[in-house]
Image: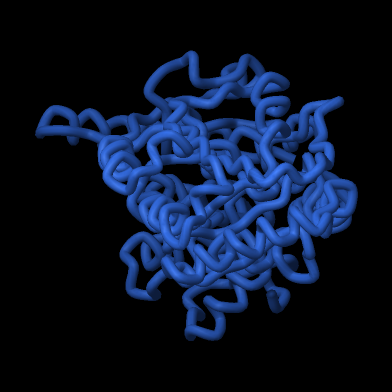
Length: 367
């Protein structure tokens, strides 16, 4: 099958990871792949994906010259997409450029876009544009697709398709350790306002919580300066450190496995964050907030704590995490088994195989 794939190639966010891992899956399955990469540099693409590159598009444009250059690039991408003549076109994420390419491709090509935002407003221009340009909309989880339907979305067929996280590094696994009165927490991701890190710091500082916890914050973003100031203001600068960019590969996996738990205190704009799947693959428990589709990986999961995205609830979640750790209730082996049964590569791959065998019939099904 000839599959045309568009997405953001550079960076460490969930959408970028999903794009790269889906491309790897398509190659491994023997499909002929063409790539339209939203990327700033050739070096952001691995060798195998660079060989399949049809066109590179800028992530954004500035000024009249930049706008004209981007418009010309989108026109070239549409031309190259038609020449590639795909059987299926997949856009990882919603984007105006993908809508333009989708409108340029005609039958028998089946076109769908994958969205990562839970309960996106139905009047969102990106959603309306995608519904008009594509034959189907894919959501990251079953609950996301069901929420769209419950909200009245009927502009195009909808079903769910998972996002592949980074594969767990071989030989890396979280090991249980005896309680010593301390819980080593880590956050991995962008430092943005909707990630709720300010609430997490305040929760650590409240009610003496910081006395039993340390937190390493890995990543960068617009909130870095504010978080640095807040940890000093709250008097927890000794127990909360901003570590910058986190390493990848085996080095990053080994480092991740040294922590007792992962924290993800998001307040919105989430689907099912891939960092939680990666943590589960290594057997690392986590505390997360009940936003987006995060609940999907907490159901029947005794090694996950789900809190409402409020300061008091996050503080309560921290206390519950410490209690479970102290009592020995957390089990890395059990969490890894939970991941294998529900979110492993083979589970996700089979869902994608079902879609690609008959895309039109797949999207005609109820989510």
